[in-house]
Image (cartoon, rainbow over all chains, first blue to last red; front, top):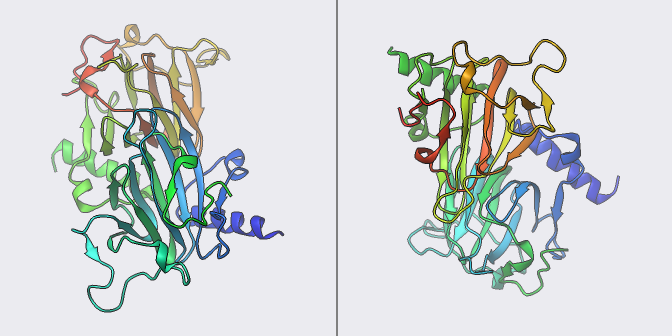
Length: 180
Length: 180
């Protein structure tokens, strides 16, 4: 089994644990996003797009335990304000960091709830977070920096959004290649 | 327990069976759609809206065994083509009837897979259907008549869509009041 097959299988296992049912065709198109970074799966994300159109988009996101999706934003395009997205935790726990100083701060109580991947500290600026447990959700405004990290068990998160144009995403870390 | 409380509880039970987690606040705002028809829950729908904005909408729909959501369409509004929606079956089974003659016909093999509620036959025109089982989905074009009925166990269906404006929906049955 190649590494990629192994991570696809771990993703399918997580979706099964969350009781999310897929068709056989969907199982074949699980997407592994390494972001072109050397430390996948520490940094990275696994996902399945259910539907993506100019009118709306829906995906299922899977994060392995303590895996981190690197900081980015969704810029305006084609006369739209950019992708707006609602994250709804279905299983596990996810910490969502957003450029919003009114949120709880990562290090307010001494020990931070999340640590950014070692060596990448320069490319993470958002320190305010919301913790999402199953049934909890949060909407990220367009054109707003954010990153997220799963808790110790990993996470399955439904994403509801406006049109997704991943190739336009702007990452804080210049090493990132979203389509890698 | 009033009838309404009983139907809310049955809805929560179905969502739990589908392993869909809600917050306490969400449990308080389960919507019972009787459509103003006299035969609820034979005709009707239960739902929870997760998010509804001009940019996208996401809901969870619950149907009791063999319950029918009456035929309707989502007309254009405010310069948009009208609500487009993707139904994804999460649990149980749903038969989705759409104004599309290329679909399997309800009575092609003699015994129809679904019967419209007795006395309402005049208000159902779509006879072509797709059956959705867990993990299967179908996208309904805007401004297109459709209705749906759960299988013998009921169904839980995720709806991903463009903005929802229920008050604009046009029902074939003139007795319907969507906001009842």
